[in-house]
Length: 458
Image 1 (cartoon, rainbow, N blue to C red):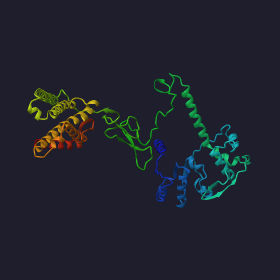
Image 2 (image 1 turned 180 degrees about the horizontal axis):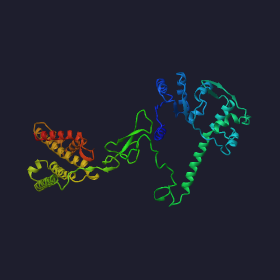
Image 3 (image 1 turned 90 degrees about the horizontal axis):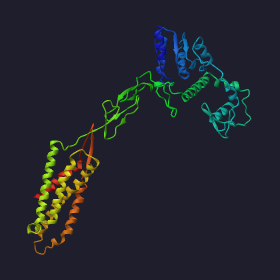
Image 4 (image 1 turned 120 degrees about the horizontal axis):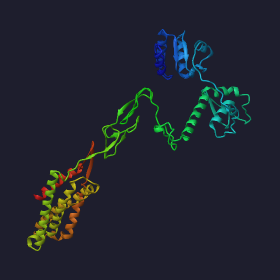
């Protein structure tokens, strides 16, 4: 209809009104359309409608007794018997319109006359056609509905023939639409044949190339007259209450892309990627980390080196004077274990500097957690032993015999098991940036560790 209006305006034809409706629309809308037709000064009406929609409109026109209209109809309703004879006389007399050309398809008539269920036993279309034409059932006990009533048909005898009945069904089959189907099938067949026989240098594509015959796919989606194509980086959003060819283009959200024209959905980028400014490609996120070349990184490396040297120096002194009373009274086994854990703690801090890798992230989660808990466990173990040592000086108190080297190691393992489960880290992906940070539970555990250290010091 839009094309007709555009072409009519080009040659100076005035369009008084243009209305659209469906047969399922409310009756009030149909009445308003007929009222517009009654009040309009023009008497020439062009109806681009299907037969079902036109029947609804004509019924309302006859009810309101609208006369004097010169109809120009489309093939969809002008040539079909959609009205009673007296109604057709009032509407279609004098109406003009195009119709399809009726051309005989060679061999189709003979093929239709030879149709029989015995030749096509698995065809549901032949079965339905045969039952409707002869009012019988090919399966005993079948029920067929006609209108609103249902009744049982007599079984087909098998002696039914189409001889003499061709005038009852052939005109409906061999109309103009069948010829259009015939031409469409042959058009597709010839197109496929041209593709298969195409020679390089004479093809219809860029640089006269031929199509890939291994996969036949549509190269271009038909363009809608209502909306322009949506470029990459956006997706189609249907307009409510309008045909499917009418849509708006919505930009993909951050972190999503679409790399094709007229995409219906946006694709979410992987966790380590982010959408570029055009939203048509996923790019690798920037990773923010503490570098060795930064001032803060260099300071941390220097502090870690000093800590390692102090721990190793203390361990060397303890080792040299391990037989002295002061070292032996200080529980040398736990002291060496504590110094060893402190050395590893200082070294583990270096894993948090530099660009993170899979191995460094694993080392951060495991090594640092283990050695830090080992330090706290050694301090707690030494504290417990000190308390027990003071209490064992009381008369009849034998607590020290229950806390030998084996019991001390067991106590450390229990402390490790109780605290180690809290450690871990979590990778937070923000917009175009990756940050490695502690879990919320780890921050809580850090407060618990600090409280434990304060208790030990007190």
